[in-house]
Amino acid sequence: MKMSFRWYGKSDPISLEYISQIPGMHSVVSAVYDVKPGEVWPEESLAKIKADCEAHGLVFDVVESIPVSEDIKLGTEKRDEHIGVYCENIRRCAKYGVKCVTYNFMPVFDWTRTQLDKKAADGSTSLVMYWDQMKDLDPLKDDINLPGWDASYTQDEVRGLIRAYGELGEEGLWENIEIFLKKVIPVAEECGVVMALHPDDPPYPIFGLPRVITREANLDRYLSIVDSPSNTLCFCTGSLGCAKFNDIPGLVRKYSSMGRIGFMHMRNVKIMDDGSFEERAHLSSCGSLDMYEITKALVETGFDGYVRPDHGRMIWGEDGKPGYGLYDRALGAAYINGLFEVCEKVAGK
Ligand SMILES: [Mn+2]
Image (cartoon, rainbow, N blue to C red; front, top):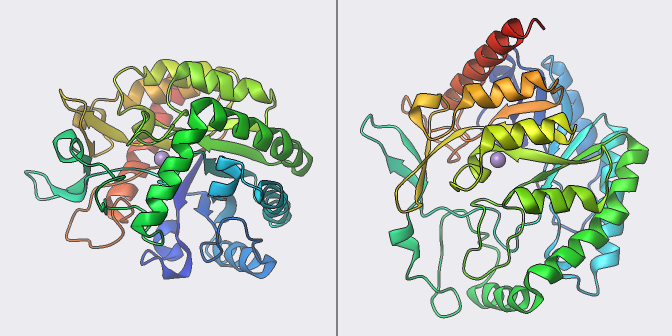
């Protein structure tokens, strides 16, 4: 596996120097963040990220994300143009050494939490989703500003999008996924790029929006639409793992043995009795996921893709982008490195 770390570019308070000081760090996961979905990424921006990473002994070979525009997801009249731009962005990334491109198919909102700085007993903070804070919210009636939601939409635009997705429904979304994959995967194959689909977070419908990247049957369906080694999952343990119906080590073993995991997001999550969840430290004993079994499944199936520690807590007085501080993610990377070393030695690798 290749250990990696997400970096938000020059505006990220965490420097590439700090990232390079984390033991075993190989790859930087980044993107051109100042271009809207549906627009072409300037080559100079990609060249700059590549050069900055190389100056610190790191490799820029994973992109997270090239966003899929709402026009592609909804299948509007701009769809073909946006898919063309998407393919061009894959070609440009490949030209600058990118091997893996992450993306998702979540309608409107990338992820949903009710609080980004929930304080634990030890004083650390993390992202949480509590159902008692969600259950009475109706974005079609009320103005809602949940943390992390795209503030560039007005409440009326959000309502318009929610209605459009309501009309599209799950099968409509699947049709648009199929059109996208059939155009994009051949381009990725040509360029030697692996596309890695991030699951929906959390993996069930929110506010009636269709969300389909949620469970085994749907992951199977997604991968079978274009049966190619370039059509893979970004297997996010915390996203799929906040639903009890997903057996995470079992799914990792299955998809890794098929060669269909391009990228692993590794983090732990604690599922509460009512289905609410809290992001926790990476260690197995801190949450509901068995991180050892997950790593063992990867090692025993010969996984050779990218791994990154996903969201961390805020600890040691650090202040910054929720989930994306330095300290707890660096602890996560060190822990995951340890798990891999043990599993590889036990497996005689
Ligand atoms: Mn993730």
